[in-house]
Image (tube, rainbow, N blue to C red):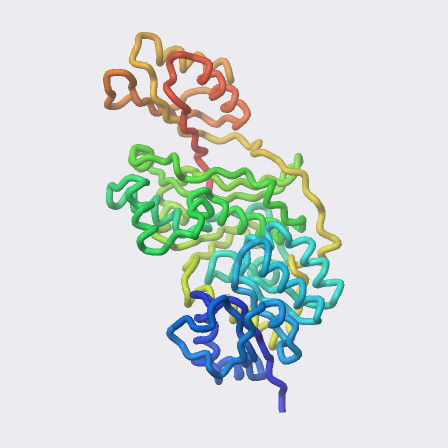
Length: 428
């Protein structure tokens, strides 16, 4: 008789319970698709007495996830606790040392410690799988490591945080400001315990660092991601973008350049009629461009019990079938350490600023832009109060370096009130 694949699950939150439900509900289907039964030997969480809406009476309980990770009756340790340090990291390291394979949904851990963990796993002949760490139910890790393995990847980009996309699309659809929708997301439970992980772009940047490592054969380097959240986006920005045929997205972009690896997670304007521009609500989308395939667009739910648990089960099933791949698609010892590079490609930019309502203010702004080598494509001034006049400028293609020179010069004048908002208009 074929031996079952025995798993231990650490973390019984939304995703962990989702995994339990699928294994119970689809036991026969999983066995048919992998050729062997998949069974849960033991589980671990902080509170054994908590009602999680599903019976756990058939599983052994471990209060310590490290103890779970090293049990003799666990073949695969499934880490669903989260966090880049502490229990999650300790338990995964213990599992690898004990000869276990690992499945995790922990994007922060992999973005920060992925290189060291990958080297540890591969030296021990073990495997770390993590489809659920990036874009929820979208199989983007499998696409990069397997389906697109014959391609030289030239760019990876996408919307990778559903909470941010929910806020931005609902600002336009419902005419609500950022603060109102932030509060709504908090009430709906869409925000992380630290909301800045979502709205500050950190969660999405973790995902981008992982995708870049796989796509370009580099060591994951979260610290090299240029990061900016959506907190400063106003309803007026949303409306003005729509008037010009664009929508604002928190967009991650990674691509190799002659100067190094460019990685940025920032709000951008994208064409309204593009695939990314049409993305609504909490949905995620990843766009992959390669020399042979040209462009592939993957769209789906980026979070939630079912989609994320589905991704975890996909990894477990691959291990049950005997599929074993290097953590980032090629041996960790062969991954290069790419130099960080800022965006050098010229692009048009959207600028919004408040000008002092005095003669010559607009001319002074135009002069500063001209001196920095930035030319104006369109300019609009709209409703103002007694002290300032909001002004919108769209530039012709320019570099961010040239634009930064102008932005710094704005701060030294007496005509620009407060910092200007500058958003790249991305070609997608």
